[in-house]
Length: 170
Image 1 (cartoon, one colour):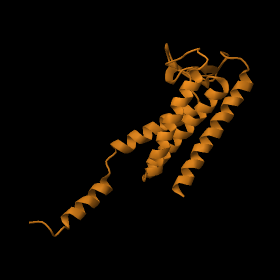
Image 2: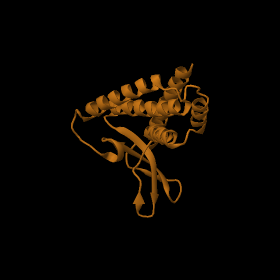
Image 3: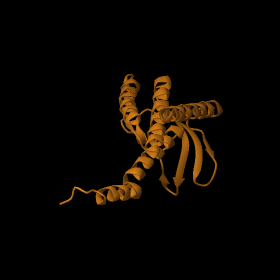
Image 4: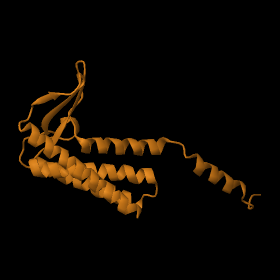
């Protein structure tokens, strides 16, 4: 049951991300058009041919396939990790990362680039444009970091009680 929920979450992220990408592609119809929403947030259609922050961007015809192949390898590793995972936060985080990664892979194979549309800027500082899959990946990574750094007092207390009740001490 736990694995089924994780799969459903990943699929939900894929569907939502793909739907929003198609919506913005239809609505904007042309890359680069900017719709200001607030003084620090815009909607803009951008195609990212690289990875995070446009790194490793290439116009080479095989670049999308190479990046997609790397993404598939990463997703395969994450799926193995998910199958062995026992923690709820860890499972949710991995499912979010997997769903976001698969959606970006689908996008890359479909368009040769990842469709981005969310754009934040503060004064002269401009954050790279991103999409909902990127949000899912970022939240998943943040949850994994949180889970790994947060003290597990219940586990520590249970271990301490078990250690103190041992009778095999000298």
